[in-house]
Length: 83
Image 1 (cartoon, one colour):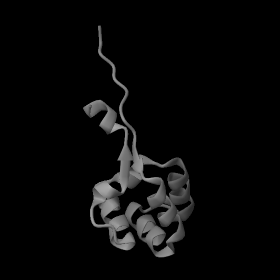
Image 2 (spheres, one colour; image 1 turned 90 degrees about the vertical axis):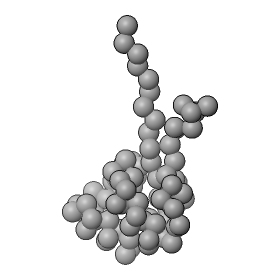
Image 3 (spheres, one colour; image 1 turned 120 degrees about the vertical axis):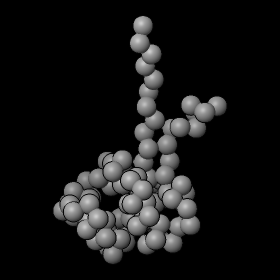
Image 4 (cartoon, one colour; image 1 turned 180 degrees about the vertical axis):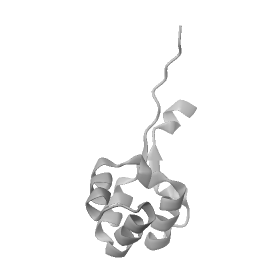
């Protein structure tokens, strides 16, 4: 019998998403990084797309928002699997 477990979803914290939405320079940097249209980025932000949690993306976000550690940007359901 196969064992199936729910995979925890990783996304940016809501307060980080709000700050990304408000920062025009950061949104421009992210569209350049991903080589996507600004409307695609807005859609990703609304859907909390996991692409925004790529390490290079997190580094850009932390740099623009002056956040010390990339782990401070993300939330996930991993904690419930570790306990």
